[in-house]
Image (cartoon, rainbow, N blue to C red; front, side, top):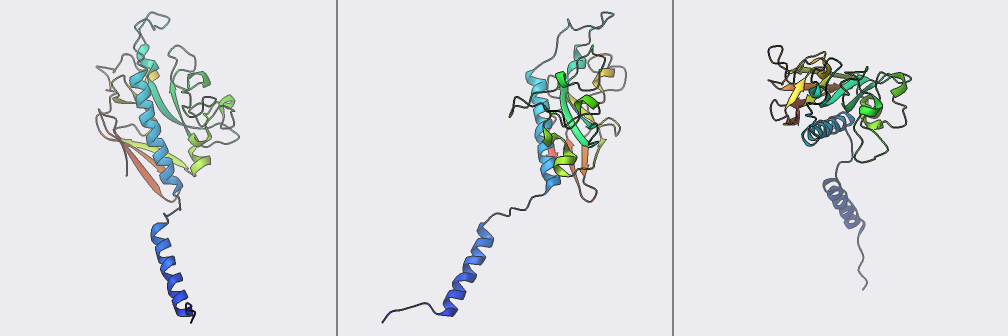
Length: 224
């Protein structure tokens, strides 16, 4: 006599398969804000890597009056609003040309090359009209608003709220503020530029927020 599954047995098997699928198949839902934070943390670490491997110490780098200014060329990550037609939240990794007229602001020639695509640079666009989010060399993912819906970036803790930039010295230690305004490697005798307390970077999409923390001295990045 030929044996066959009953309808009840088939239903039971289908239910079991459904339960196993729910447990085994990974959750494919994405959180754009979390993805933006992970990317940013990775790029902060890469900026630190550039600063340590590409040591910009060069006493021959001087300004028009002979002042040594090599320290103004340290690698840094700066947040800006990209220029029109898309005035959006973006960031750029660059080493400032200390004698350029655009000191303090990234120029296309100063921006780090994207290690994953040598035809691109690590910028999502800046406030310069000729360097917008539509520039052929920009890396679109660095435009946090267009790629992940991030509408605001704020810094706090050990970093000034109006600075929106982070730099590193040749030892990998994080510094705050605009490097182009420094008068010596660490502004000794003035406001200390080395970060002395946890620096926070808060990303928001208008509804949710995620906070990155950069530790002083080590530059270690964590996501809360």
